[in-house]
Length: 242
Image (cartoon, rainbow, N blue to C red; front, top):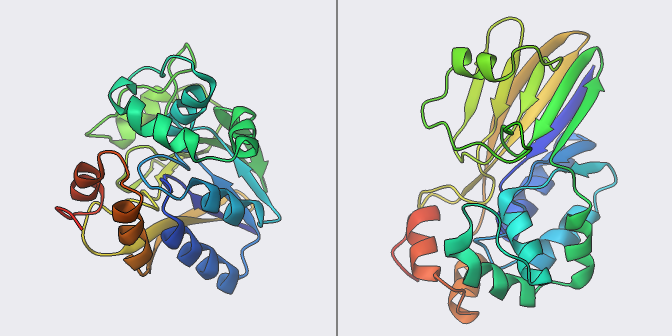
């Protein structure tokens, strides 16, 4: 039997990540996967990397915000759909250690691995034939997801990007998104992550919510004058301004 932790959409929220890592450590889980959008929206890029790089057994895939920051740091055009957030990503890039930018450049768009007897696909979101993220499916279902992955060998597909929980299974395949770790879209300060347990060919998945203290995060938005902070706080943290 193996148990893995799934972190996705941290979005530069270091207090939320610290609370989740503390909870994972208490549970004795060693293997972690970070499914992209590690950065963007929140101001704590370097601290996020410090915390994640302390973990002994962690693998990463790239998200759209990670790519947007990377391209901003290189002076390249933003990726599709990220044009409106360009000034935000440029601000983040100026504050990010170049070594972390280089690390993001090495992250793949997906990981296909095997846990116990189960082939597992980990990605930020479903990819189109050109290898780019598909538009968000606002009404996902088992049937729609199964059509998306028809013929794929993975029996477990784990992803993020859409910040709400997805947990679908049809007996042949399980689809799991634990929801955004760093953006609760609520004024309730909770950080979500996933625990997946595989025993032979049996797969189980659950979402864990960890309450954390938002004080330092909210102070940082104000003190650093994060671009678009009023809109960010309203949309992603359920607050008008602080």
